[in-house]
Image (cartoon, rainbow, N blue to C red; front, side, top):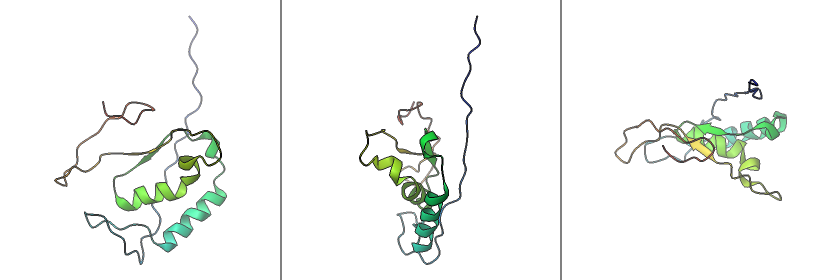
Length: 114
């Protein structure tokens, strides 16, 4: 029996963009990223060379983290001029309407809860 081989898995962790001087907030009081945070994202985009290797984007449910993911990976999420990849930001451990958090397991490559 042949042993299956898998491509290497690369996990890239990043911190959210700056929230200093941000005024936008979500319903829980979490701040959006500021103009400085958006500039952080532009610098990241200019220096990150591995866009063609990204298969999944996962984010904390904190507003500034989701905002950073959307800002940094807009090129992949929009797929402008290319076939739509269907890529989405998958939010981990989303808050419920009452503000509590509940673990959420996602089916691979579907974004749907199990």
